[in-house]
Length: 280
Length: 315
Image 1: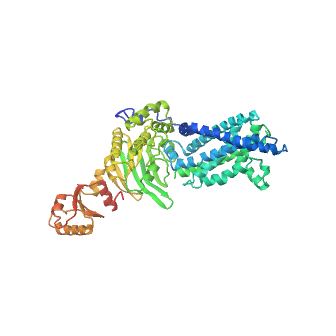
Image 2: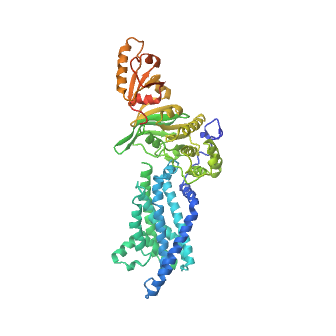
Image 3: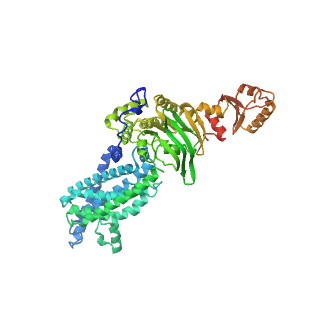
């Protein structure tokens, strides 16, 4: 018992050597989240695998066979089979859903239930590093799920271009364009009451109306224009072009830039709301 | 040498003044306490010392640095035991120490032996690989203390270290903190338990409503603000009668005995506390005052607080 804390039993350990070179960074905050992920990664990867299998089988193959029989004009789905049209849209849509999930309850929990952020804030980690650490972890989760998704797509034979390896990156941009502003907003909340309302009435409509399941040109013009503003529409466009190899042009840079801009706006907002919550 | 120096330190939340211009100094190697009831401003003060809350006014210096400009550098040299445990309950005992040590950029090679030492120190070696969630409150508290020590801090901040623990678990924590003190670790703690303050603190300040109302060692404070002994006269419904009887007693006997029989009284719902320097004399003169029961005890910091504020520490 007596040898316990200090390295020497007479002097307090304040003179100990490895005191000065302290350089805590975002990396250490990421490590925490990865440590927690090591506990349940199997279940999470299985979910990431099963979800696209079910969706692509039911909608791509089942519903798709009906649609492919009916569609006569090659312009309707840009000449694609429904499965090939749908799969990249779902890739982006899934990235969004996962990112929203990861940036609501876990973020409020970091302040309120588990107080992970509070524990980090007592260490040399600064507010910016605490939130970036969590964002990097969210991006990692979305990337992992998206690569699994891409693997399932390949198994279904719906990958039409080698550029598809970049699609999960586009999906991460799409997911993080949701995660960073969502986390910024959640940091101002004290209750989780509105989270399911937010998912049901803000996120799900985007999932349904932003070109995931059919081209937005099928929508009334007003809705089509609203769809253009949603990050997920940009994510869907990116993923679809990369996975099919069609329409690969400079507009893709524009889509990516829009998502990146949203991510930075979200980070700036989160820096403000996190700091207010952590250091009141 | 003073490790922490504050003057005129003030913290407001909107209209509410949580900390109202307090000044204090913590010296190297001592255990310094903030004693006061809930809402006295102790935790707000601790958060400012922990560099996670900015003062609205006044001056604060920690380890010679400014908490606003050099917060991270200061926090690197502090160990914090927060009021509510914020361990990761899903991770194992050892993992909790490891991830926290990483926040201080300590390498695996440094952490591995240190975690073993600390688990030994807080008597959790056998539980190293167990998940935290099912551990008892006392074990979690000890783990939180071990976690605060992972960076070998120069100052340990403990916000109500034993609140919510059963008596036995409290004694284990006190004993461990005593060991740290003997090793020269400076400790700053808050408590609303007078016995905790008496047990642990070399010096303390008594806080009430955001202000410091007294400062000194536990013994000094008792000598200054209380008497040697306290006689508790208990009577469930007749407290007022007892008080009146005591007042008479003082008048009658003041001229006849050498000193006053007692200095003052405090009336509580079920008893009257009589502050006296000689319980024997007082008891000999009780005459026709007939309490249900009588208890003679030493003065404590609770009496100091009562005499300073007219209220008890724990409601």
